[in-house]
Image 1: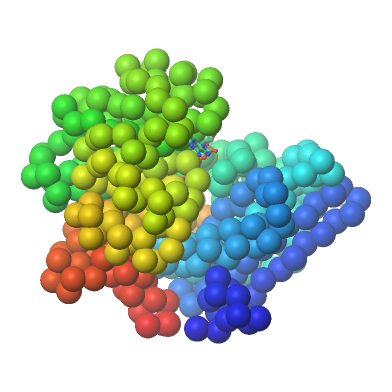
Image 2 (image 1 turned 180 degrees about the horizontal axis):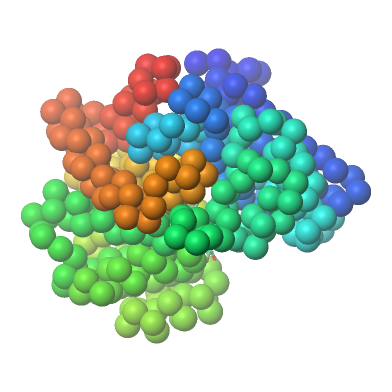
Amino acid sequence: MITPWGFEDFDAHEDLHFVCDEECGLQAIIAVHSTHLGPAAGGCRFWHYDDPAEALTDVLRLSRGMSYKNAMAGLPLGGGKSVILANEESRKDPGLLHAFGRAVGNLGGRYITAEDVGMSVADMIEIRRHTPFVAGLPIEGRGVGGDPSPHTALGVFLGINAAVRHALGRDSVDGLHIAIQGAGHVATGVALHASAAGARLSIADVDEERANKLASGVNGKVVSPDEILGLESDVLSPNALGAILDDRTIPALEAAVVAGGANNQLATPEDGIRLQERGILYAPDYVINAGGIINVCTEYLRDGDASLVRRRIEGIPGRLEQIWAESAETGRDPQAVADATAQRLIGRG
Ligand code: NAD
């Protein structure tokens, strides 16, 4: 692994672009981890970081995750990601989005952007004015496109079903208790599917209003963000931000399964082993949350319709089963198995 300046998260990224536009206040980082399988694809996050170094770590980890995610989903795409640093100088207005679009365009198609936390379909329309290398645009005609999160949520829900089958021998989530961290786009979709299938839900979000709104729509219970990880449940479904599973939170978990859509849930690779040692089944995040990028890829390449997207998303449970089977066979934790498989697929194994 190439680690310039001892910076482990760099992990042999092909290139890294720091973007600055003083006129509109844009500060962004675009990370291209791998183009081995195709152009590097991954969303753009608009987020406030207390320290810019956190933004760099975030984009590098997310970008590598996209390489692994796209490879594991069998897509002809490499992995990349971008972050726009939200601060007082950078309002998310059209000028800022256009400047970001120009920066993506300057890479000539090495990086394809889409939505991530803090971005919307409307934002993608603005970015599209300055670059063709963008997906997550409104659906036209009988095509595919739009907000990727319902597709992510469907994949997560199917993955949760596979996990409860594997860990608990249950055919469905009917009657099971699912603790959902987050009440945003992905969490909402997961909650709607799970509630329709008869699950009992507990929901937490730092935005109390969002948590209340979602809970009232799915007959769920609101719990505080501090409680959700340690709640006694069958499934913990993290659908907020990353690095929430670590040496402090894992010993306190009271769930049989961890399966959710948030990217980079494990703070370190050792946390995958910690979960395994506790007998908690983990669904590697970039495998279970690939539904959105499957939709984005089908939109961008125009190689299929909504039913093909659905069939591709229905492949997620099978991939998880393969990982858990190899984990049981080799004794390695599921995240380590997934990482090794993905690295082989992108030519770095
Ligand atoms: P979102 O912004 O709509 O929702 C995130 C929610 O998490 C917000 O409501 C926020 O208030 C809440 N939150 C933040 N910190 C929290 C905490 N400590 N405790 C509880 N709630 C907290 O984002 P989203 O699109 O739903 O994405 C959620 C996660 O899924 C992210 O990690 C994202 O990278 C990942 N993901 C999203 C997609 C997608 O299609 N949107 C695809 C793959 C992965």
